[in-house]
Structure formats: structure tokens, C-alpha cells
Image 1 (tube, rainbow, N blue to C red):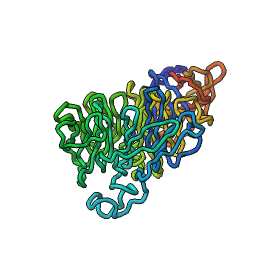
Image 2 (image 1 turned 60 degrees about the vertical axis):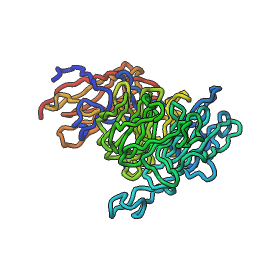
Image 3 (image 1 turned 180 degrees about the vertical axis):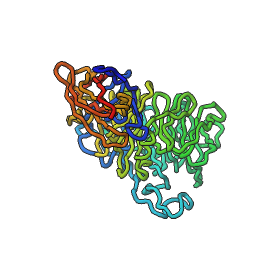
Image 4 (image 1 turned 60 degrees about the horizontal axis):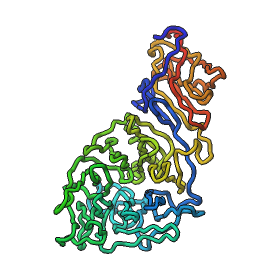
Length: 512
């Protein structure tokens, strides 16, 4: 028990935790919005500015950026219905270049009892949302990768390989590679310069567990019978059809809905080999975030992280709350993840119950190991790199550049940035305590205000005290009386103001 008139420091570890209620989660941060930690100090998440002049036809689902040999940067944007290219310097830089005849990843909310192959789902229950056209799948997504300065493109709803040659002055639509296999779910360009497709149809036969690749340096040579080229294929020992691939430091990760394979180059005559490294249920290919040679993704059992040839679970101390509020219909279709790039963070966005678009995010700091969530949703994420800041799509059909300024395209965010703790354990919960003063550890006076939430009994009603505003001399006067309390610190400015240790003046006030 602290002595009378003692300043008690509030020292909580970085990151959020949620165990039952806020009072079951002592001495941890319980809730937050638009806040992050850097070296143990709280700071606001940066603001964002709108990039698009006019809205796209539908929310951006896939963002892909690269630089030419002349260092000019370009970006392709895949939406529900169309493919756009960014034309740097144009008044309205986003031009529709969707090829004629291309079947985009359109998602329908209407499933139905007859949707999908016989035996795919449980009898007597309506099916998950289905792809409006193309093969049945719970996932509808774009896949893009660079072939030098060019880009190879597909969508699992279309299943063909399309070749895009960028010209900023007179952009043209991608053209189909007629020699390539069809019925593919994803594509990737290997370090050895083979165009690899994930799943394919050859000679009218679907091979759902096969990866295949073109001859080296020739995306049009798919002659698997030739002894003079390096084209080939490999059937993986998977239990569900292959869906997606991404680059990692050790090779290529190939995902089915239930498994993860590491595909590595083994030289001729076989060229590629594969090892199953994990079994788990993936939520969505858009929810896979390659990051600095590794990758993070979400499953129904938690976040998993690939590094150094292995997949390991990452403990998120509020993941049960995330899963409980992910919309069961739209969550598997809408989750999106990507690296931040400015900070060593991976963002994971998802729709909450009753929502058809993403409304919340979870941040994982790779270097420091903490998780936190917040209350904005993004439909796609492009890490900083080609652009100096990350770019994200939103449900309003616009693109936003993030970590730029401290407002939402000029709209103040100061009332939305906060952290909220669990129980602080003042007086050990054994007697009533009074808090009469606080010292907020802010780098700028008055940048944060303070609220208390208190209870006299574990199951009693919670009372709110404050908000209290810092005085000119740095002290904050409070009038709080409770057996157990927790606090909320909210920003009052839109600026990069850090929050260090806060101390409260606690006095015992009886045991009744």
C-alpha cells in the first residue's frame, strides 16, 4: 500500500492485452486507437492525405508498385471490378486499363444452398459468399509480380496470365499470354526468372495441387516435353487446392486454404522442390503480409509468422476478441494485411460484425513484439518503399497516403487518439482510494487530458471521473474515489507528442 501523498507511477508494458474485462486485465493497456509505442514510449499514429481526385469504381483490393530502370515509379490498383494504373503528373492520375474479356474478382454477398461443388459445405446451411463468375472459391483476389519493368497479372476468377508493359504517356491494357496455362489461382516471378503459376489447367484437366513454371527468361515457353528448356511442373502433397504464393528470403511460400509450403530452387533437371512447413486454416490471401523477407498472416487460431524456414505462432493477447468480432460472412473475404514500411509494423485490417468492409486494424511491431488495435479500416495496404509513405485503400473508394501529417486529410484526429488501461491495482483493491492529482508524462504540456473509471465492487457499476485538463504548471487536479480504477489518456492536439510515464497522487480513504 502506498503511503499518504505518494506519487504512484503508472508503468505498463507496451502493447494491448484483454482478459475478460478491463478489471480482469490489471496493469496492461486494454484499449487504444491511433496510438503506437516506440522504444517504450507512446506516440500517435500518423495522419493521412487523400491521393485520388475522383473515387475509383469500388474499393481498392490490391496495390502493386514498382520503379522503372529510369527510377520512375508506377502503381497498379486492382478493385472489385477494374484494374487502374497510376499516371504520374496527370490531373486525374488513375486510368482504367481493365482488359476486354477479363473476369475480375467480383464478390457477391448472395451464396445459396446450391452454390459450389457437391459436398463442399454442410448440408442444410447457406453457402459462404461466392465469386460471381469463375470457379467456386471463398476467395477472390488479384495476383501481380514484376517481370523486369513489366508486370504479370492474374485474378483467380479469370485464371489467365496477362502481360502489362507500362507507358506513362499512353498506357494500354495488358495482353493475355496465350501459351501460358489457364485456370490459375496465383502467379509469381522467381529469382531465377521463371514465371511460376499456382494451380493450373492443362489440356482441359484441372490440377489443383500443381505449380508450374515457364522456361527461364521466356514467359511464353511452357513446353514441358522439351529437353532444351527449363519449363516444368511439380505436384504438391496438399489436402486442399493451392491458392496463393509470395516471396520470402528462403524462396517462395505457397499457400493452400489449409497448408503452407516452402518452394526452393534446386537447379536442373528438377529446378524446384517443395516442403510442407505448416498446416493451418488461412483466412484470405490478401491477409498475407510479406515483410522484410518474412511473412505474417492470420488464421482461425491466431497470427502466424514465417521466418528462417519455419512458421511459428505469434501471441496476440487479444486475438480471441478479434476473432469474436470478425464478421463471419465478410471477414474471410475482406481481411487485408501489409507492412507499414516507415515503421517495423505489419497492419491487419478486418470487418467487424455486421460490416461488409474493414472497420478495424491490428498492428504488430516486428522489432518490439507488441500488438495494438484501432478503429479505422483499410481495404488494401502498400508498404512504404516505392512511395515514401505507405498507401492504403479505403471503403470510400479513395486511396490515402499514410504517416503524413497528423490529420485525416485535414479533419482533426485529436479526439480519436487515446489509450485506456485495465485495472491499476491502486491500494490493491482492498480499500477505497482517492486520487487528487496527476503528473502526465507528455513531451508537450496540455497535449493529453486524463479520465478515470472507477468501481467500488468487482461487479458494481463503473463511474467516470473527468476529463481533467493539465494546469499551466504541469499538474492535473483530479477528484477520484474508488476501490479500483483505470485511466484513459486522450490527445488534445494533432501533433507528434510522446507520452511517457504518468504518476498519480493516491491516498487511502477507508476500507468500507
